[in-house]
Image (tube, rainbow, N blue to C red; front, side, top):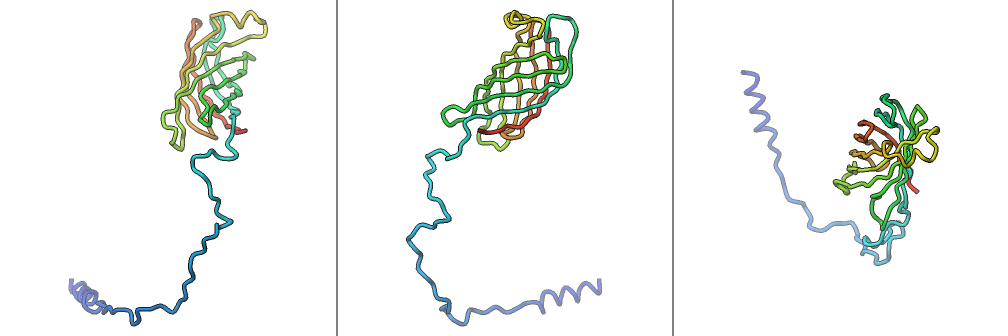
Length: 189
């Protein structure tokens, strides 16, 4: 305590620096008037006009993992899949409809059409909810497999991302439920 009081005294009393006003009221620097010409490095743009190179579509390449009973057999298939999703822009807005083709490890091809609703379009993560209808085809079923109602299913999912995307969802059909998760990258064109 004896050491603390003298240090406190020195801090409060001796460190009190007097302040003073500036000795002159004018500056010695010469000022130059602002130039009325436009700066070539700055672009004057109208905020109401769209960007020049705004993309017109997204092509999403994704890998995922799914599990479900896709066909009329009673076996529960699960495993990785590769998906390609096409999402066009409409009227300078975010894509709302998309079309997807996927193939899983058992060579079953899935085709789907989905509709997106964006929760917060101004958010950096761009979260959305997607509802889709899909069908799964097998090579031995030929063209008749496209019209079998047992192969059609409804899916609901949530996703985020503008460039790097992730999506998680569930689906249901006559043959049973399925779960899926996919991660991908959007190529903008």
